[in-house]
Image (cartoon, rainbow, N blue to C red; front, side, top):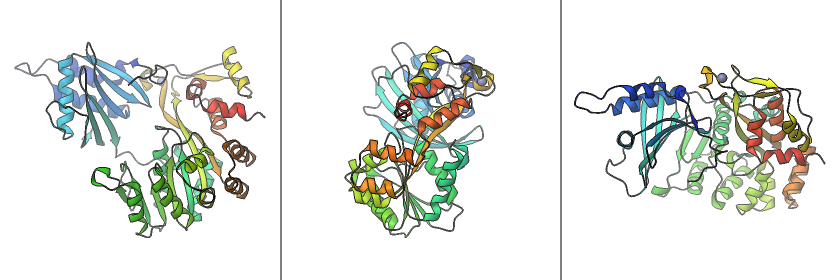
Length: 426
Ligand SMILES: [Zn+2]
């Protein structure tokens, strides 16, 4: 898998895995047996402390790299000899219920365990590579509370619109963005605010990432023949008030979700689309008719995740020529100060502290609905959204840059959204 350096800068940072590195320095047990279990437990504890989303054990030509993914970026924390790496791989395979023998094909496994006060769910994938088996472990900390809507970084006016949505009890709300943009987190936050309502809430997910109290959740299982459309139809027979569909990714589930939303049910879902108005094209691509989309669609939200600057060490400076030129090209006035990451002990030298969302929320009005019925293209829909005063992803990014919450470099690394800033000039 080729990863560009820009998307995946490699940082070797000893502060990220102090327990694991200390274990690497301890002597083997009497008899020469390495302390594999203790090493793995130390690595898990390090991962929990830094809220890492994944552990990677990747054999290379020379050695095996141990890496943690934090805030979307992979950090190298250690390199060990192949034999030690293979022992760690074996540990995670056994823990996750994967056959301990050498694999011919990638395998998946699960495990649940408590580490350093966290209740972890592990989703393990093992794949044979030319240099040996590599392991990717996705860590879900189910003891962490679901984030409230006001913790995600959504502008206050948009939060109010989202909070008003459940009262309508009808229509489709979609969250758009690429993979890893935090769409599922937003859906769970939206569900969380519904939990207090006296209503019936059902979800169809692949997989269920969080168990939510008082909500009926069903997991799609293609191996056992339970697909999205079938699961949605089954849940609709439960007579719910709210339905969450993890993702609209095929014409059949698009059809059932949209029909449900048009016939008096509130439906939440996610779509793979660049921006809020892009939801319309994405639904058309799933074979839906303009009148079906116009009838059902209520709100489209788009989002990205960017790293939040560490407040302990961030530093500010007046924009330089390159930065000034960037703002000019985007048709915006640069702020007097821009903030930059530095790195300190509090952030393990990364300069960042967790991530925050960039959001845009398009609440369709009658004009927008008519445009969809008339088959209007993305550009026409975008103009309508601007006319309605939608705060765009680029607007939201600039507000957060100006406030010193994020750095301009994070926004520039996103690429796509700077265009919408430039496009808005006319
Ligand atoms: Zn810091």
